[in-house]
Amino acid sequence: MSGSILYIHGLNSAPASRKACQLLAAMQQLGLAEQLQVPALHHHPRQAMVQLEAAIEQLGSPLLVGSSLGGYYATHLAERHGLKALLINPAVNPHRLFDGFLGPQQNLYTGETWELTLDHVQALAELEVPAPLDAQRFQVWLQTGDETLDYRRAERFYRACALRIEAGGDHGFQGFAQRLPALLTFAGIPAACYQRLDFFAL
Image (tube, rainbow, N blue to C red; front, side, top):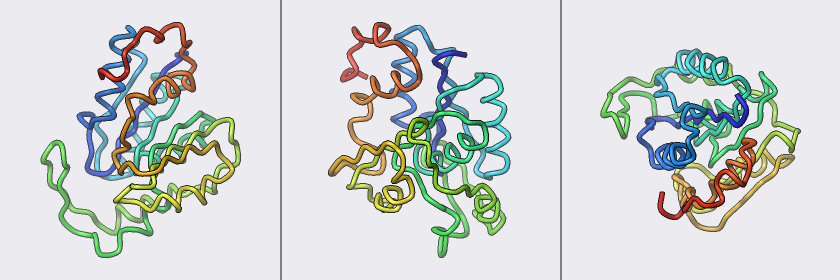
């Protein structure tokens, strides 16, 4: 499906997250809602991958838009399928970041509680891929004020890719709605489709 987008949310996030809602609102106003999927991902990486593979099959060759842990998933899937990916404050090698974090977790949006186990960490490790080298297929958007992940890890890992680094901001990526024209263009949606849309109102 030309111009299709698969949005991949992060750990303990959901389709109700701010960025996902802003992207959905834009696609709805453009009459392109059917070209966007925002699956509610299972907390276990193996089950999340099954969901994402099914979405890719349904959408064809979507642009993968991954936030935080979703950026890690998107990188793996983009390399596996030769897809384009736009990564927003992506997690790099997240399986190495969970020391001291095993145990009970709660989804910030759904209230679901679950247990982060060593099997989750092992499953994440199995998705690790080398740093991408194809700058044409990757855009990486980072904000230096990310309070959850050190943006410099992603800056180093994705150094061969197209990087957009903004001072300040936070892990949720401030000003995302105003950046949506660049995302839509990268997805292959012509500017003529969205030039009248007020992105500041999303």
